[in-house]
Amino acid sequence: MRDRKTAPSHRCLIPIVSWLVPLAAVAAPLAAAEEGPHKEPVVYVSLSETARQVTIRSDGAFRVGRWGTHLPPTRVPAGESWSFAAESGGIVIADGQGHSRGAFSERIFVFPEAPKGVLSLDGARYRGEIILSPLGSKMRVINALGLEDYLKGVLPAEIGRLKEDGLAALKAQAVAARSYTLYQMVARPLGEFDLWPDVADQVYQGFDGEDPLCDEAVDATRGIVALYKGRIIRANYSSTCGGRAASASAVWPDETSLPYLRAREDRRGGADFCAKAPHYRWEEDWDCGELYDVVRKNLWRGVAELEGKDPGTVTRMKILDRTPSGRVGRLAVWTDSGRYVVRGDKVRWVLRRTGGGPLRSAYLGALKQETRDGRCRLVLRGAGYGHGVGMCQTGAIEMSRQGYDFTEILGHYYRGVTLAKIYNGERAQTPSAQEQRLPGAERGTLIGALRRDAKAVPIFEIGMSGELDSPRSRW
Image 1 (cartoon, rainbow, N blue to C red):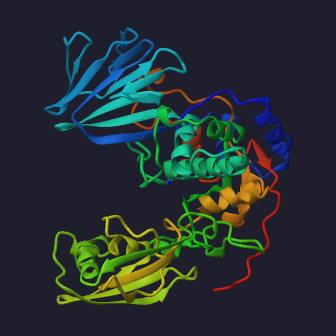
Image 2 (cartoon, one colour; image 1 turned 180 degrees about the vertical axis):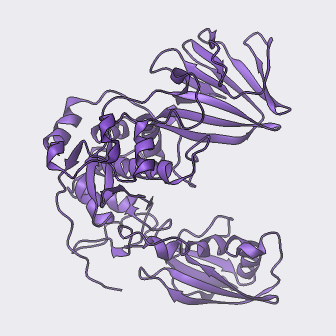
Image 3 (spheres, helix red, strand yellow; image 1 turned 180 degrees about the horizontal axis):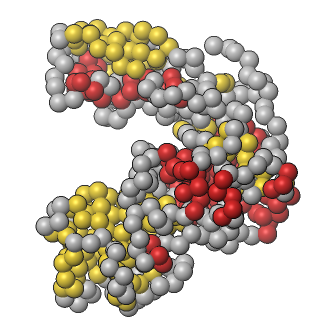
């Protein structure tokens, strides 16, 4: 659903500044406003929970310290590699000559001396700092870095490397990803890290995933988030909605409904915005005897009580109802041990493709039996790729190509939102600069203020170009 940073060009800044409104003209600020404009937060991303050994180096000098000891970090010369191995609840450190530097029970932090330096972790490069936390015989590996640098690693991985005509879509993606990140940092219990580096949150690829146009989009929208009634939204997004976006509560039935994430058509008068996407429409087929075996093996993914158990032979399946967007709402599965119901997006994790991955979406037609090359096949036709909630990325790209700006794109996919810039150009201190305080203390004043009162204080509000017309139903 990530990471680098260069100074914004004047070409990027001028359009943003021209839309800004003085703070006095917007709603009253939070109780935390006396702290002044907040700085860019620091985000903590768990790169691994199971590392046994890692090697860290840098083209410039870097330092290695022990969390909470307040001892001066050890300086490591440029180009030298140090290894860190998990052992008996601690971390064993060896320098570039293979000499042991000791075994330590504390968390270890590593940071480049140069402010914009880059660390290489087992060959993959990251901005910011690396934190190693003992987890028994393994280590948790965390990348702590400024939110804007993190986003520059997210955009290419999530929406792709686009041409200039996709810049508005990249800006919309930057605002959506920034909003999603801050929402999760505030909503989740405070711990050692904030986000996962994959589809559980947002795909993050570090410094090696940078792209110049994506960087430009992040810089041009720096600090801008989407708000609903003053609160930062959970700006979900997926690859392709198939012509109809889904409501969050329908896709994830156990969650509270979010009014800005609701079912709607992905069009404005003409063709669906995502109609040119590779997976706008798709087809999957199985041998007639294969699909029920697939469901039997994966039914636990949609029915928690079956984890680690064999539900027995599948004898029948039926779509019980559909959501307002047309996706499968509930799928009933009968086995020789009983009847089970799979709800929402979990349907595609149970009806898996022949290659083993989940179905592209739960936006499905009827399952049909056909004869192909003399063989009995079960054929399923569907639409879209992903959960379908929030922004449709391929639709956003087409909107950009048609000349819509990023505010119009965001207004189309997140109904009723406003945009605001909520932090200034400075960055909160990273762990090494704060004498290694307890987890969470170094994320910045913005996160603390939002945790006290979930409403965001705008430095500036940004004029929306106007919501698109209400869609007309065609389903």
